[in-house]
Image (cartoon, rainbow, N blue to C red):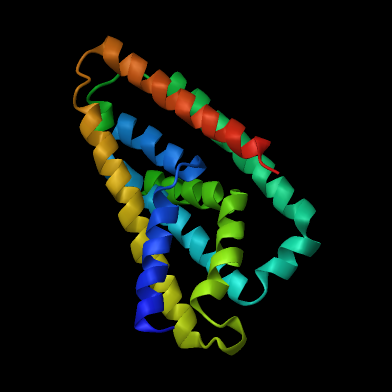
Length: 205
């Protein structure tokens, strides 16, 4: 991968990361309720899942998707159901203004990572992105370990930067909500966003 293609790839990944979809909706919903810091492991889980798809694409993800289409469909449906469940949980979240300021426990951080991983793994847009874009930036027939590591590092930087920027902007909007009534509306808005993300994901073919 040349310097020019590396820069172009980083820009493409960044734009892909902030494109509206289930992952972005999940980040928005969590940042609105719990602040930007709570989104780090969620974003990291999504990014690691993307890197797994990236590496798989380098070794023939297109052929895998063709032969294992039913498996990808199952993953997508499970991911959509999980998003809807998270939306329901947010809709019914307790109205505790102090609780949303607290830092997550270790188990909460692990759960956030797993949630992010599942959300990204169940999004067919991720598969299509890497299948379509990788040949544009690198020659997969002569791909070496160094190229794969570089592409993975660029993906890590580009996606985390984009997702955390979204989290910060969303969390700033959260500061305008000071009353329990406002927090209730906030929780239900965030829950609605998450349910919409799940419905969107389930409707994809």
